[in-house]
Image (tube, rainbow, N blue to C red):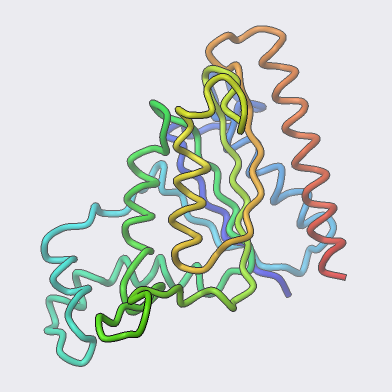
Length: 225
């Protein structure tokens, strides 16, 4: 059985194929899950909606607790890290991270950044030892065989590598850096563009992204044998 972690980060609650002004990323992420389950109905899907229920931002208490050895933590420290533990446990349980992450002002939404800050954590997803030879940091999920799928949307166009706005795209590169740091290095990305134009180019981009999602689902399932 394969486990998917289906995470949506859009502040919009609806899907653009079902309601006016709905989310394109929710549209793509739900399409992925629906097509996956059509072919593999026995697989498990964990659902996390950080767009509508954002994690708490990292606080001073969180930092104090996270950098205190587990055996030395006081009860309030365990409480401060409880949400982070739950989010990390979902990642550990998942084989595929399906991340619906729209671009807000050239980067990921604050809600998603709060999720990243909670799951990139010393002792749980990356190791640190200042006495270690060479690099004192290392990823703890490197050999876990996990992969991520990032489904995004952008108001403008030309954010892919080598295109006119590539240098201003901090969504996929930022996610790749954070997940790679904890050992999730395989990443696929698909995005809708032209949202602010709202014309035929947007419709063409949505159709192309939906087709890419379908191909990716097929390819990943075929790879499972």
